[in-house]
Image: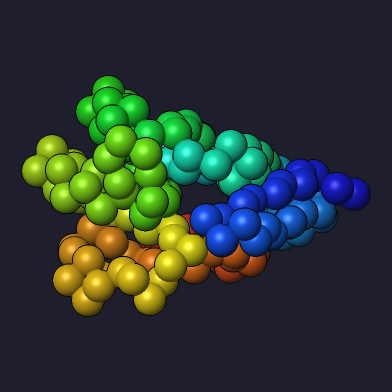
Length: 158
């Protein structure tokens, strides 16, 4: 069964098309000891200016039991980080107005313990300095495998 389809274009006019089947998510539902479903209490903030990627990630994480919020710019992300309880930030490197690295550096002062997954289509441009920022727990290359993203989020939030 098809859950979501997204299309993404980059600056070189190439594109990627992705989809996820609902049955992939069933493996990530949390089950309590009596066998019933139990909601994950972790809250994830997804920040990406590409609507299709934001929508896909929102649906995947909501269906996996996470509380999800999203933003499409750096300033909106910072506002949400200050106003809500966020357990994990999943943010794109290249954002309009204020890029992902600027957001991460600014949040280090107000939210120093929130782990970050930095998404980028340009992994090779992410410098060693940026990879060494304490909050950044993983640099995720786009396009990504959604199962790998779910596993990495679970690993970080344990």
